[in-house]
Image (cartoon, rainbow, N blue to C red):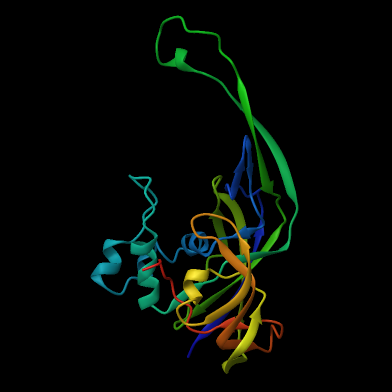
Length: 237
C-alpha cells in the first residue's frame, strides 16, 4: 500500500543556490528541485535503500571526485524501490541580499611582484532563516527521516517535520489541476499535461498550476491537494 509523507522544511540558516544568474547577482528562487531534495533526505547516499548490486555501485558518497552530475544513475534506483520526492514550494519565506568581495590573489602562489590587486564583488539573493518549504514523498515502503538535514551551496541547516497522510484516495483518470510544483519529465509519460506555468531553473525547469488528465491521489488531511499517480524519475529518454 502506498504511503504519502507530508514534509515541511524550516530553515535555520539562509539558503543559497543559483536558480538564475543576472550579471553579478545570483538569485535563489523560493522553490527547491526534487533532485536536490532526494539527496538532502539521504535517499541516494544511504545504503539502507540499496536492494541490488547495481544500486550499491551508484550509491552517493560525501566526497565527490568529479563535478559531473549523475542524476540518472543515482536516482533511477529509487524507481525500483518505489520512492518518489516532489519539488518543494515555499509556505512562507523572506529573502536577504548579501554582498561578497574577491580579489586577484596570484601573489599567494607566485612569490614575485604582480599587477595591482583590483577587488571585485558579487551579490547573492538568499532565502532567509525561518522560511518554510513543503513537499511530498510517495513511497511503497516505510521511510525513517532524519530530523536535521543540510541543504544548498552553504550546507545550510534545516529542520524536517514529517506527517504521514493516512486517508489516501485513488481517483480515476479524469481532468484535474495540481497546484503543487512538479517535474514535467516525471509526469508527462503517465499523464496528459494540458497547460501549466513554468518555473525556470536548472537542471530541469519545473511546472506548477498544472492542468492535466490522469489518475491522482487525494487525502483528507490535505483536501486541496490533487497529486498525480505513478510519478517516477525520468530523464528524457
